[in-house]
Structure formats: C-alpha cells, structure tokens
Image 1 (cartoon, rainbow over the protein chains, first blue to last red):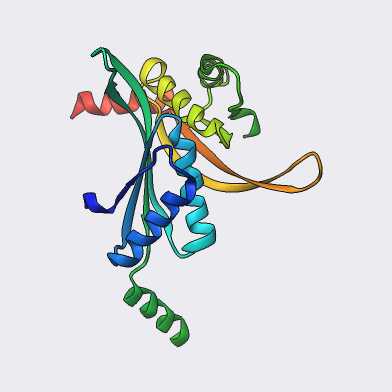
Image 2: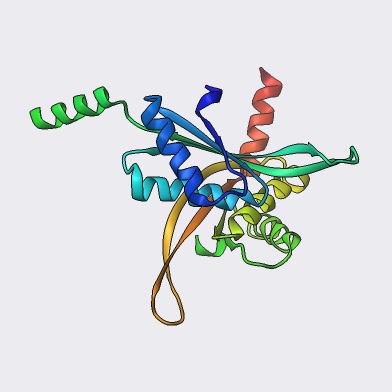
Length: 106
Length: 106
C-alpha cells in the first residue's frame, strides 16, 4: 500500500496532481493516499480538489483523517505538527461498467 | 446552527481555540463547525487539534468535508479557492453520564 501514497511537500501543485493521476493510471490502483503536515495541509486540499475537478471526476474522498504527529528538530527537541491524510478512491473499471449496465437495465 | 460556526481567518490560533471552547460551554452545544478557506485550512487543522488535545479531549470529528468555493476578486473576476469544514461533536452531558452508568453496570 505504501507505493500508493503521495506526500505533499513544497513543490508546485501540478507535480502532485500528476503524481496522483499517474498512480491511478499506471498501477491500476483503486486507492491513493495523500498525506501532508503543517503548512502543506492547505496545499494537499488544493491538490486533491484540482485532481478531482479537472482530471479524475469519478474519484471520491473515501476518508479524511486529521491528527498530530511528533517530529524532531535538529537539536533533538520535539515539535508537534498537525497532519492530514486523504484517501482517494476510484471505482474499478469493471465495477464502473457493471454499475452502468445495472443502470441501463433498471 | 449558524451561531455554532467558527470561521478561521488570520488571527492567532488561541483566539479560535477559545471561541470553540466557549461555544461548547456557554451554549451547551453538542456540535461546533469549524470552516476555513485557502491558506487558513492548515490553521483550522491546528486549531481543532489543539482544542481536542489540550482542552476538550472528549470531542470527536464527526465529519470532515473538503471542497472548492468560488470567490470574487475586487475587479469582479472569479477565483477558485479550496475549503474545509470540520464538524466537532461532543457527547451531551446526560449521554456521557448514561454511558458511564452503563459501563458501571456492565
């Protein structure tokens, strides 16, 4: 599962959007997890919204978790930092087709 | 329900933490909604985590929604901005007491 995680840092937004789209398409993944800490949390929300609104409209937010992580400063002291984890889910192609068929039959 | 909403802007973190604690205590509310847009999203997560970890450990995140809102610039052009809505829920005192009693009986 670790390979389907995208960590948001301080690169440009589109880098992360493309990373997510690539993970969904190249690995045929049904889930990609987007993680961020501190100031990057806002960017993470921008990234998933752009991904959903402009590239993969069929994805849903399966889960959104927020929490606090403990990081270590260079001098060894501890720093608490907020974190977010957004689980993006895309229906598998087969399931999507099945759903379409069921709609057509109904 | 509107009165139990806290909008996160660019004041200091503790202002918002106190606003949430006050709403829960003074209005005997069972839910407080925290909303933020753009860069303030990171602050909103900090605010709810500090509230939960240091002041109201019994609250839960009942719902976390993210989305995109359209704002207008001064010149009339449109700007898309990400948003977050975090619903904080606190068990009512009576319910909490009931739960305690049930635990004691079990």
